[in-house]
Length: 341
Image 1 (cartoon, rainbow, N blue to C red):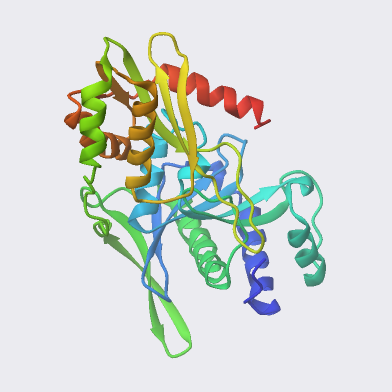
Image 2 (tube, one colour):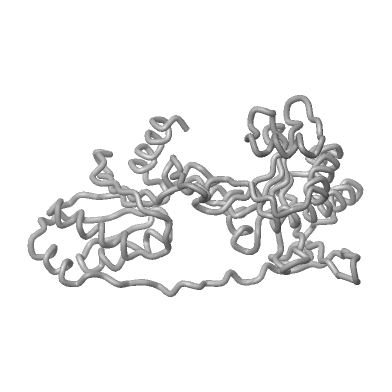
């Protein structure tokens, strides 16, 4: 756990979380009642989602920025889960949840003891975690803990007002969210409601279409063309990789399946990266070794389509987006079961 916070700041986070739990706002709010809280430190908006109406998970999730919001919307629409079965591996958010004692780690329990706090019973123990795409849920940094404290405070304010006025979060325009916006006056922060559209998601990467043309020509001249249909897809591995003094992460799993027979043709693990060249090099190596070309390749994700298209187009293989990918999902689910997920 990163203890950049003072004990007083940790104490405040636990106090606010306990206050949030006591009002039981999930009894009148749903996870679709989304509102924003702007971070006083950097201006980023966290989009808040209150969970607990279904009596399964009791929590406040704060989806960070437009990237986090898009992950929430994909989760709510069911888009996340059609390929990768674990939504947690695809989310960018901070979460305050209320768990049984057995779910807490040693660091959580030591901090609670040091603060002199006592909890008892099911779904009563506060737990704070940071979620990042591809990474294992982890302890909060100091900055994350401070923002989560602000978010919990404002969630209490919004929830109590929403209880009296169910129209409080009704959009004032398309793609707008009610956001709690701070104004600093010396050491005091005043908050007000503003209707805001999420800022555009910054695209820092340019499309990468690089392909080893010499290897492509070699494959075209030697490989046998067939009427086979393959599924090629990536997902985060079911099991994390743990390195000393680093946050555990889920490697990227690249899988090629025969669509008709559901037989696994190839799979490989990669470190987390936005560089498609390593994936493409592996696919070219697989095609050289397999010495066969399919008639069609089915993919599920947009990023997989972007990764595979430059190779497939040069080899005259048709590529089609297919969200089902039944062979891939069967293989992936069996990996989850095998690894005890």
